Amino acid sequence: MKATIAYLPGDGIGPEVLAAARRVLDAVCGAAGHELRYEEARIGGTAIDATGEALPAETIATCKRADAVLLGAVGGPKWDNPNAVVRPEQGLLGIRKTLGLYANIRPVTPYPRLAVASPMKPEVLRDVDLIVVRELTGGIYFGEKGRQLGDDNTVAYDVCTYSVAEIERVTHAAAELARSRRKRLTSVDKANVMETSRLWRDVVTRVVRAEYPDLELDHMLVDACAMHLITRPAAFDVIVTENMFGDILTDEASVLAGSIGLLPSASLGETVNAHGLRVGLFEPIHGSAPTIAGQGVANPFGAILSAAMLVRLSLGLGTEADAIETAVSDTIEDGLLTPDLTAAATKPASTSEVAESVAERAGVLLAGERAAV
Image (cartoon, rainbow, N blue to C red; front, side, top):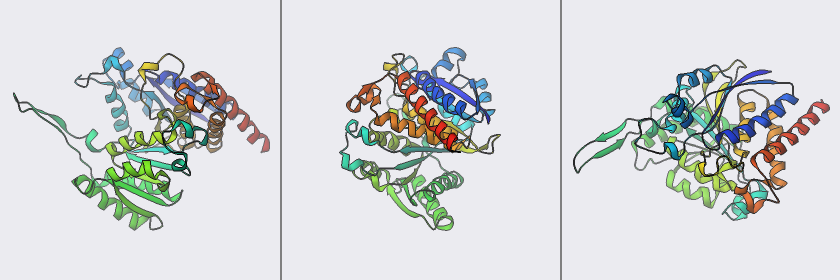
């Protein structure tokens, strides 16, 4: 297979963790005889410095002609002015909207080795295996916003808007996932207060009852969900929720794994690539972590696992994705870990050392698979 990857390192630790993911991708896909071509482009703060825009037209064009997009992170103190006209986060929101990436898939599966790195009790983490599907291109992040100025009575507003069509399509994405897993779907809203949430609940209920009668559906208010994610996370299978709620809940869920640096994500829309699969944007859920940028200690597991999601979902290479995920698990269980996971480490390692370990293990696993065939 030949494939083109739009490669967006971004800011802070983004270039470091993406280099680690690329090292693993090259090892695995090279061993399997696939040819990946990377087209690098700017986004976020580095794009602002170079072009004055957080999402240059050239970057959009690069992403549109690619089979998949791999992203590091955006933002940092240099551009940390919420009142600035141009901000790094505009690049992230912009590429999601431009590519129509409405379904953000965030799996959370704690590793036994890392239980000591989580503030949670080990028994609470037992059997946790959940996915959050976050609606990504609607809601308050994309609604009308502004200020009505007055001397002592300035009013700011952010409008949250959702359409039936937006809710239907993300419900389908989540329901299909739930159907392939344990057939439990939890829809999270704030229907006791918000009109958008009441519409959300109505649409989700209608779609699931009509088209997915085999699923067990329950509705949960977002504040209750935030509590239950900590007290009984193993009860969840697939969670579907709106943009802002999903943003907050998935960062909360990262403590279950032991570090936000461990969690990958995939953002999917309807656009199909040359291989007949959906074009996706794949990125770790963590930020740019500017305080450790350039030190070689950033946790690359989230980026590497995002690369595994890329080859599975946008390239259809399930065996290669399995090899990467198993190699990550083996590396973690061996205690080869970056400083954010010191409590669980037996072999403190740098970003590049972790990447090299995963690449080597995945290559061996893949060679074994090919030899068996």
